[in-house]
Image (tube, rainbow, N blue to C red; front, side, top):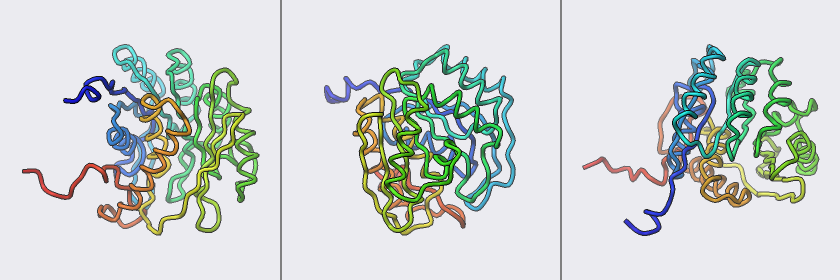
Length: 283
């Protein structure tokens, strides 16, 4: 074991999100991404779904008091270095999560405002959007909305140009608590054409991160995977622009190499362990 390996502290990260039985999105995808990037992943289940690569057929919310119990029990024992929020589904769960994280105040809180699945199914109640905007945005250190989600959060249409993305990033940043360093990553995957430029903003710097569309149907859980990757990297690197670049690179490779997996007949998952699986059976 090298001195560098011995000295490295493996961060404990937490995802609070929904369960996708197909493993492409939600807490299973989050745990895979966190594990692939050197973090120990913990999970609190906030919603249950009957879901595959083609559709979400049913959603069963978790009792908010049980979500509270999961969070309190975990934090009572485990030092959590970063938290990621994904599908929360209902107002009651958002309120409980906001209350408990407002109490424990993790150093890094990444909010991925999951609202609609890749198959187009609604994952967040309409009446819960206000609670997410008013109770969770002020707690977050980083939010990662795509273009439709950014539009919903700001009660406007989905934007279609990079210039509009910059304005949206500024408006979203203004909704976050001004104390400390807070960041907005507006993801450009829904932009027309082949460019998928993302905009990263902290109230001062406006950074454009270029990207190109990858020809594949295996895009199930890309948003979950990116935000989970950033959650894993934040305690290790601290620098948000560098974290974002590395997380994007990881996701691009996971999408590019997703053809090695044969999962389902719809939007397949990305290959979270592309850098770790050699394709050879264990001896």
